[in-house]
Structures are given as C-alpha cells and as structure tokens.
Length: 210
Length: 210
Image (cartoon, rainbow over all chains, first blue to last red; front, side, top):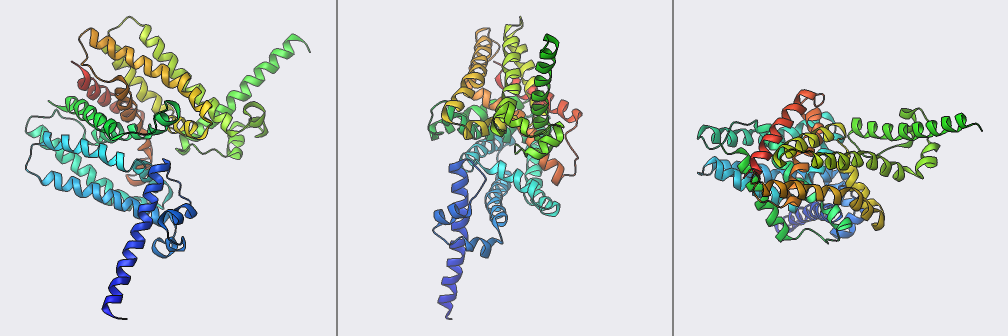
C-alpha cells in the first residue's frame, strides 16, 4: 500500500470516527435525550453501525468518546482563560458566558456526565473525575482565590460556586421540554440564549462581588 | 357492608395508594434514577404490583401521581408564602431555602417533571403546565414585582430568575453521583445541605437586591 493510500485510510478513519461522535451529539441535542439507538446513529452518520464496535468497542465507548470531546474543550478553554492577563472578575464574566454557550450547544452534557459516572466501573468513573472534574475544580479555586486576593470578590467556597454556575446555566436548557410541550415555544432561540446569558452573568457577578 | 367496614376499606385504599407512591419516591431518591421496576416497587411497598394497575392504570399513572404529590406541596407552600405579611426580600430568602430543601428531599423531581412533560400526550403535558408550572411562574412574578415596587429588588425577568433559582438548587443534588463515584463521599449530608442552602441564598439575594 502506498503512503498516499495509508494517509487516506488514516483520514477516513478519523472522519468516520468523528462522524459517529458528531451524529451521537446531534441525536442527543435534538431529541433532548442521552439514550442512543444504534440504528438511528447509523442512519444519521450514514455509516454502518458495526463501525461503533470497531472504533469504540460498544455504545458506552462511543458515549465516553463524546464526553471526552466535549469535556476536553471545556478544560482547555478554562486553562487558557486562566493564563490570560485580565482581572479575576473579567475572567469570571467570560467564563459564565462560555458555560451558557456550552450548554446551549451541548444540552445533554451534564446528563451524559452523570450517566457515565454512574454506569461505568469505579476505576473509569475515577478517570472521568481525574481528567475533567478535578482540573475544572482547580480552575474554579484559582479564579475565586485570585479575585479574593485582589479584593474584587468576597470569599466563597469555589466548589459550591461551581455547582451554582453550572446549575444555573444548565437548567435553562433542560427547560426546553417544558417550553416546547407546555408553552408552545418551538425551541430556545439564540436571542433567548443571549438574554439568559446576560441575566445569569449579571446575577452571579453581583452575587459574588465583594 | 357496615359503615365501619366501608371506612376501613377507604382507609386501606388510601394507605395502599400512598404506600406505592412513597415506595416510588424512595426508589427514585436512593437510586438517583427515575426508572422504576414494578418488581422493586412491589418489594419495597410490600404490596402486589397488580395494585399499580388498579390504582394508577399503569406505571406512567403512578409517576404522574408522584409528580402531583410533590408539585402540589410546592404550589401550596408558595401560595401560603405569598399570603404572609413579610417583605418580598424576606419571602424570597425563605423560598430559596425551601427549594434547596425540596431538592434534597426529592432529588428526582426535576427529571421526573421533564420526563412526564416529554413522554405524555400534549394534552397531559399542558395539564402539568396549567396545574404546576403556571402557578409557580405567577408566584415568581408576584414576588419579584413586589420587591421591585418596594425598592428592594432590581428589575429582573421573573421567568429567567425561576430558571436560575431552581437550576442552582437542583444541581447540587444531581452532583451526588459525582461525589459518590469520583470523590469517595458516601452521600450528601444534612450539614452539606445546610452549607449549600446558606451559600445559595446569599449569592442569589446579593444578585437581585437593588
């Protein structure tokens, strides 16, 4: 096999793998569910569902790969935010906005995280904690402590603050169901997202400023 | 049949019906799930699972009855809070604490609500909105508007504020999974609940005070 052929194969592998992850993400987003059917996945990705076994071992492996894709982005962007030369207050404002945008894009993410923690073996749950949750927790401690040191933030528990931020951001999007089925609103528009982003940043920042 | 017999039968009916609802609530709380198995339910309640069909038609009917039990309490206590002679600020402080306590007691409640809205026919979803969500929404509008009128609260959208309060309160308890499986904490203690209650009331009240 020529080098070109090998590269094409490698490209195709990357593409098929990513297509499956993308398809899973879209199904979860649109259906507001974290339950995947292999036949729907195969239809959506335009690929044979046997490829799930080939690339991920099983459906759980695919869900772990999706979790990795989404959580790695969050951890990386938090790291690069912390490295910026801005005040802690400015960083936190940007961060809260980014959390809203993340849950708008991946409304399933919190439920997927909980499911993966609950349904995987303790060692795998621990790996999820080590790779994603502990770095996020450390980033929150840095942001809050920096703000307390420079006198802009009041001293609060960064861990509890993390629950507040993600909870307030996440809820709006699990509310899609209620809006769609009870209040006849077809979906959450970008305009509503922007309004909620502004509301949440303002409320939380007022809540923690010294 | 004598009147005494009739009354005893009525009592037994009420008791068996309530026992089934209680058992469903306990299973959901302890397992951190909203998926019920009839055999587990029957074991927990000490009753034949055929009674689910008798009292509720099916499992979905039992889940609707549990939702009714829990949501009715919330709507009633909001109504009686609004009727009290206190400032809007005092009422909101009490209310946020009550939301935390509710999610501590019924950590499944938000997921149950979303599931019932999604999986029932549009007319039933609409009934859920009319019976529980619209009264809660109206109560939030009253509380916020009263506080804006007396000058203690800044003007905010009561609907978005509702998402903030319930989201911030709910998240802590869906985090049980993470605490248990990744950070080796057996469960959320009453002490942690109290600490989080104080944290959340303080943060949100600072966030909305004028």
